[in-house]
Image (cartoon, rainbow, N blue to C red; front, top):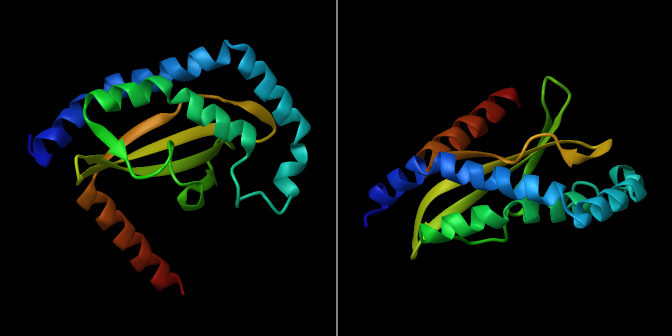
Length: 164
């Protein structure tokens, strides 16, 4: 199967992949592990003003993000997709920002491979609040073609240079 055909198959599978993220997050919220993770989150409020913030993932949120991907990883595996990093992506390369509605978003971009060929970028947005442990919405998936990401990054770097 060509990379272009596989990319189209991945795009056609978007709703299935998103549903698998929804299912994983909903299932996690109904477990005893969720309650324990929530308790840990309440005990480490100091995290956000510590030297660790922004360098090392917040343990409860990191654990929750990995568990919410359980069914997603099964579905991408069926497509023959793998990643070159741990799911949901490299924390040091992720970004965090605050939306207009004051919700926090941790964004990961992870390169998807088939055999040895890069196929696309999967972007995962984890929408949450730092003040309370939960992701308000299941992780949100966006699929980008590799060249589209390169163009976006080039425009971003160009606009950064204009601001300097």
